[in-house]
Length: 323
Image 1: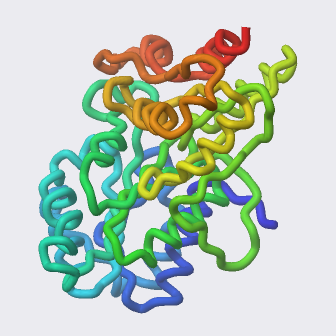
Image 2 (image 1 turned 60 degrees about the horizontal axis):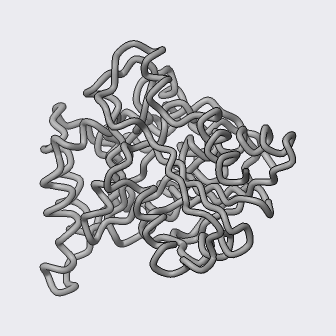
């Protein structure tokens, strides 16, 4: 296996798909937001210059171009940058891309990928720190992928590009430079298949994106105190692998869900609701959410660190349930 950064693996997936299918195009030439990671996309710009389009900066207009081109059969990728910016294109993503297949009685498909970076970025403050996954989850017709490591970033992106459904690919800026093993050759990771990142018998911790990293760190701390945590990486929200969640909770009897968004109507809320509806008898104690606090995101980094999910808060929640 090769060792790649998250950013390199993501761009490798795009390069492979553009090489395999001449119908794949990038609408907007930037990728993965700020932070010095765009050097990885330079070879794509050189090799596929005729399939990279640079409209003027307007999220609504670019999302409309990507959606319209996808309706016409082009597999479009729109790297939107910070997830907060997608609110400018909410109508195009939710009402056009997400509803076209239904509204056309199946005659129109929208094979578009909207790539965003979400979460607490380090001083991003209010308008650059949104995590809109739970909002998107309220919009039928949109697939949602959330990788946590380089191998998953590549496999999930390949699946997103090949999908005939619009996909919002939610990444995290702090993952970009993290390295990990990536299988050799081409491979796809199907949506709706969670991954057990760590086996454990005492408590289930469900997470996605960067919070999987924090959960694994927490599991190491907990193991030193005699608590073995099982880490369920969702990898995608739509479709959701309910079976993997329920199976793990059936094994441990305890559940912590870690989620970057504020707690009300969050991913954590939905996962816990699913377990309550379909596996209440599996639980030994009530489940716990570890979310971002329900406040505006401060520009001060120390305050930002205080409001977000982190390793210490996950450890505390797990110890509370296992006491």
